[in-house]
Amino acid sequence: MDRNALIAILQQEGNLKHSFSDDEIESLAAHLSIETVQAETVLMKKGEPSCSMVFILDGLVQILDGERQLAIEKQGAIIGESLFSDEATRIADVRTVEPTTVGRFSVHDFEDFLSENQPLALKYREYFRAIRRAREKQLDAENYTDKRKYLALIAHNNMKESLMEFCAIHSTKLEKFPLIATGTTGSMLYKKTGLGLSKKVASGPLGGDQAVGTLISTQNICGVIFFRDPLSAHPHHADIEALGRLCDVYQIPFATNPQSGEAILDYLLSGKSEQELIPNHVLQTYVQGQKKVVEAG
Image (cartoon, rainbow, N blue to C red; front, side, top):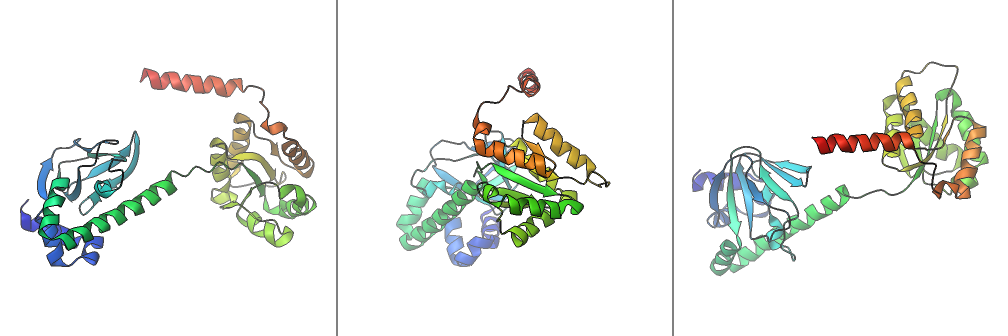
């Protein structure tokens, strides 16, 4: 790839072309070195000092945090702006997926740029620092771990009024929990009882029961109150059964009528739920078996 092609690619990069003129981009390009590397090449390694940044001119790269893929970047992407951060260390690994051409901008290139055109070089430095801050905020948001334990409120259509009555009677107790509800149930809850939700998911047939199940697996559910209609067929019967099974797997209190719902509320508010549970031998055996599979692989 020649210098003209490099300039053309940089001038097409969205954020860059909106922040700098063609002449200013051409000035930056004059300080980049063009490199072509093979697939599976490590361009940057997490924790190492940031001594350069790259512009992807052709090809595809992965940004990784251990085994977790954070992003896949292609032509036009800017990677390694930690060069201009205060700590100046890599926060992720960068590895090529296929043969890739990059324009590399090193500390020494910046120093040369600074001596040649200080105002423009400093403008670029602030631009790259702004990109870095934006990415750090995005990464913090993606890595945010919700540690709340929600009480789930679910009801089939013929049971919604019963659940509303139950919630109205026990509103003082329910106010002590972060609440999650599915679909229409969640919409009715505030209107009929004044109780607010901390989280709302889709209706059961649209995946709401599965969403609550996912929160059970991440230990974000303290109990489930699910007023089921025992006399009607349901298109998402498999999801309902799966939700009940997950409650058994993770030992989550699961109520299906007003009496058991009241018992669960009293149990959760008693503080007994924070005490050590009877060991779940089935789950422990399964987890140990999975560890052996991973170790053997």
